[in-house]
Image (cartoon, rainbow, N blue to C red; front, side):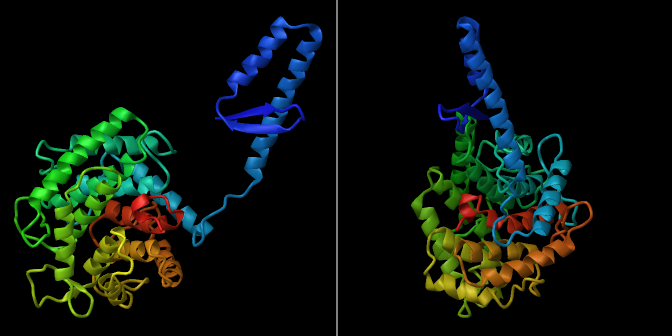
Length: 384
């Protein structure tokens, strides 16, 4: 809390602490000192009260400064979306989809958790700290001894949830104040990284399940971004794993700049959504000037349209295109984001949710919130 003190010149000052200690000191003076000192102490207490009240009033009068590109309507949509997530979290701390692809509670909890982190919440700080804490506990309980973060009974393609959970937990790890909780997260992430390393295919990618020994682009991207996030916060990640994964993306790139579904399809068509995700991987690695990344991003721009893409997987495609444009400070961002913002605002449902790509309401709401909250520049992996 703010501590309000009165300097000798009558100036009010605010410090980051509790007010109680100051009040206690003043009353102690009043108890043990002469009458005139007691009067002085009483006057000082009154001054503190008036000063604190003035500061509180001033704070209420100062309008909130929204980031560029965040309109009042956007802020309202974000608030309703976050409220929807908090209402739909179950007692275990998880979220589950209601779409046609299944529930996927671990994947959805990782994505919803990221949306809450972008609002400035941790397990101990922020208005939705209890929800973040419950989500964290759920994911930690979902970690198996072999390192896979999953609930196999609900997830036929557990490597998606594994990757999103690693991303959420690693981003949270850098903000965690509780050393016991931080150690628990670190231990789970260390085992998860080792599982990901073991599951990597010979060409350098990943598939839907850890023992498949195969690969495809969308799962590969989730693992690469999660590994980068883990490494950024100090969790050990073998350099050879990342190097092989980045080579996989390079080998999957077609002559038009796009990325095909899998490196094994030598003549496969370029996939805009997977290409946008690959660009994020290059940029997360700091390769902003990479010719491959630039070609891939230029391939995406005309195909992943702000008001809806013709390639399918619209929310998924924009989750990564928006990140790529924002973190690289690409000039196209200033044209792209207002259009995508209005598209999303027009499709938010009355209860605050979005239905994304037919996958589900939690999926759509989490992805929409991640995109809309990018200008707050809150999450390290998605910062400019």
